[in-house]
Image 1 (cartoon, rainbow, N blue to C red):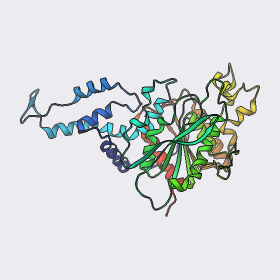
Image 2 (tube, rainbow, N blue to C red; image 1 turned 180 degrees about the vertical axis):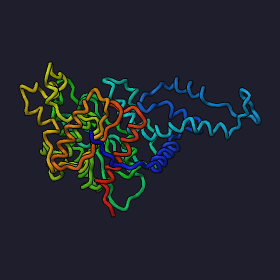
Image 3 (cartoon, helix red, strand yellow; image 1 turned 135 degrees about the horizontal axis):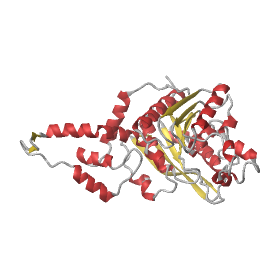
Image 4 (cartoon, rainbow, N blue to C red; image 1 turned 90 degrees about the vertical axis):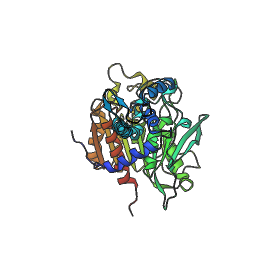
Length: 392
C-alpha cells in the first residue's frame, strides 16, 4: 500500500493552536477550563451537565495552605499547577482536534440523541473567528437550505480561499453543526469555511441526486457571494466525511447537474481541491448478494433495474484528467466503507494523471485516536495550503 507523506510534522504550529484552544474555552479559571475540556472526549461523547459538575468538583483541588502536607509529601501551589498542566496537556491537543473528532464520531451513531450534537448557538467560538449561522443559500422542494459561515475576524489584504464542509450520515442523518470544529480550525488557518445542510433522504422523498444538487448549489452560492464575504472565487475546496466525502468527491469531478436557476447559471460548482475522508467511491460492488436496501431506496431502484444511476453516483466512474487534486484519508480498520473503496479511487486518479495523495491511518471509519485526528488535521491543512492558497 502506498501512503503519502505530503505534510511535514509541524509541532510549532499545532502547539500554538492548542494554546489558543486553551485560552478560548472561556469558562473561568484554569482548573475549570480543564474540567470543561475533559467533559468532551475526542470521540465526541458529551456527558450530562450534572455529571460534569460532579466530575469537576472531584478533580478541583482545594486552595493550598502554606506548607500544606498531603500523604507525607509537601505540595506547593506551583507544583500542583505543574502537575495539572502535565495531566491535561494531552487535552490541549484534544481541543485542537475537536474539528476532526467530534463531528466524525457523531456520524457513527445512526440516530443520536439531540444532546449529542450541540447546537451552534451554545458553542463558544474563538474570538478570532467570525461566525454567521443559518444563512439561506436556496429553497428547494419547499425546504430552506441553510449554511453556517466561518471566517477570520480580522481584515484581509486579499480574498481568502474557501472550503465547503459536507457532513456524513448515510445521506439520511445529521446536519451542518457536526462540522463546527473543522470549520473553526480552517477559519483560524485563514480560510472562509461554510458548513452546509443538504436535503436528507426521508422515506422516498429527496432521492438521489437531490443531495448532489444541493451541495453544488452551495459552491455556486459561495462564488456568487464572493465579494460580500471576501472569498477567492477561483480557489474553493471541498471537505467531507463518509457520505459527505462521496459528495465532496463529485464536486471535484463534475460541474453543475441542474443549472435551471438563472441567478446562479453563470457560476461553476466544481471545486479546485477535495479532501475525501472515509468516503464510498464505487456502489457497484454493493448491489450483490441481497443488495443494500438503503442504497436501493436512495437511488430509487436496484442495480439491475437502473444500473446507470448507480454508476453515475459512483465517483470512480467520473475519474478524468480534468479532476481536481485529491487528498484521500481512510482508516485501515474501517468496517463500514472498506479501504478497497479508497484504494480503487486512488489508483484510477493516478492512472488519469490527477494529483492525488493517499493517507492511511490505524483507525476505523470514525477516527477515534489522537494520532489519526492529528494526522488528518495536518494533512488537510497542508493540502489546502498547497492547492488553494495563492503564493505571493
